[in-house]
Image (tube, rainbow, N blue to C red; front, side, top):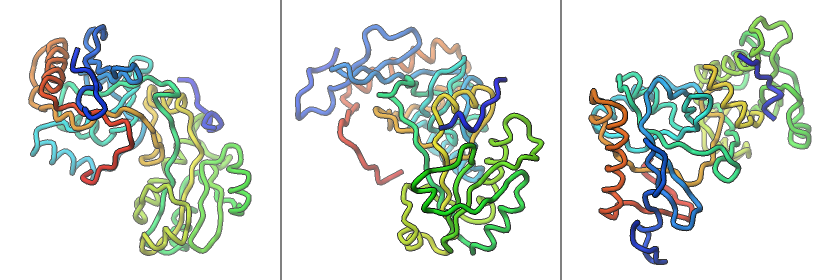
Length: 318
């Protein structure tokens, strides 16, 4: 495996204005085995595919409790509501969003999975990061836990410098406490973790404060606002911005970043597919399941069940 350095991170009805159903149609020349929904003006090509579950790999860790909850819900509902979003890379479908769904379906023993496949292009996918608001205890307790993380070094670093200059090269992240202390998170020089020591240490750090307290992903950096939202706010953790190539390389070789750090921005997400899981569980060739998916989506189009929203949409039932 090539070592990855932390420095790498750095034909349906014609559409009418009042008709939200007809903007997408089945692609006329989509590849064999791929269900392709195309925007009538060529702006989006939304691909769905049934794939062997062993070919689908996560790029981030998962939360065991969330996997257990979702597994129970999948069994009760019997349908896949939102397909995981993936990118095909080095023979693998790397999950950009949907690690919990993937893990739950693996645990339930499904041999095949429906995924949305996106092209890794600037207009298709962007990657940013979440911050972590760590709460549920005092600052001293959090710092004690972090100082006990193998391979981690905490170095005082003023918030003004971080805001003006960003993270030093090679840093794992930045910690700003509710007491207004700032620290750079670094992998110690004496770590014995090998070439990917930065990743191993980063995973230990997030696991450590996740076990110590509660963690919420956030885009907010105002500590006063965060303190009003989360009882006993201890700190805000910020991370370097990964490159998409780094994420794909790590995932293709079985490496994962901590859960809830990466934030993929993907226009044209396919939601509310509501595909019956019983079909994915059947003992039949993959080609037949792919043909079924094509027919399943086509039936939704004919029944005018497919809506395309160009404007941002807020969901209140997730």
